Length: 132
Image (cartoon, rainbow, N blue to C red; front, side, top):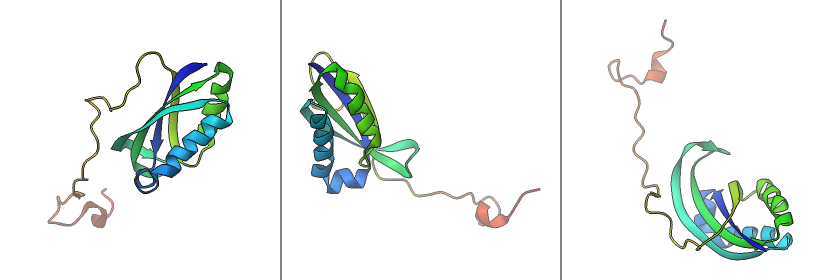
């Protein structure tokens, strides 16, 4: 058995309110394919560069598990089909396990107020109509 590292993107409200549901889903998928979960760590929430399944923000979760090489393809496929996991990446891991996110991993703060274009006398761009 080899060690693998999986990074997941999960909906932030689900990761905050129902963290046990997220860890249970990861554990269920890994164990169903004959592997063992070593560690699951929530890294934090970030604003995404583009929407993923209608979510502008996401929570990153890092997991380590030990698995036979033949089972990894099935594990990857099951994570793709999971309703809890928005995105995932699984790679082979060698070395120490991380317990903290890297220092350059900034978690998302509060969202700035939404700005509208007020170029024509305080009328928002959307209300001006088409430009010819």
